[in-house]
Length: 178
Image 1 (spheres, rainbow, N blue to C red):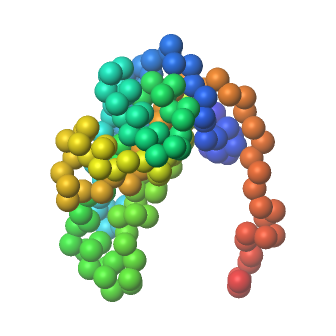
Image 2 (image 1 turned 90 degrees about the vertical axis):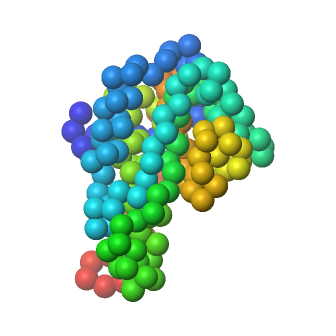
């Protein structure tokens, strides 16, 4: 599939076939796509945790739904947990000078690579930011000094493709000036 078709196909999936596991080779290609994502000063300030074991998935799903959100997530057959790592010296210095926290931007980019790669592999995905971070840290043995920024659910989608509701181009883009 070409890139523009891939972008058009990608959507946030909230219904998965819980009987179809994500194949390890597909997951490996998705992680490789994430590994190749760009980052400020090539800092790569992320650590990705894949969760595919059925019991472990159920525990992670509970942490994703424990505050009333994402009730559908227990259908997903894989998760990729994105943990923010410290940036390298040049990204940290540049962030301080420019008053930007580049790891947040970089982790957003890596999540985009994950979801596009999942679509290429014929999988549905959804980026989740609402979860019980303390519980996830405990379940996945993530140090208290680290932040869990996002979790991407993965699986075979059962919901139908929806037309993306997006702002008109003229409302969100301009040439030469604001």
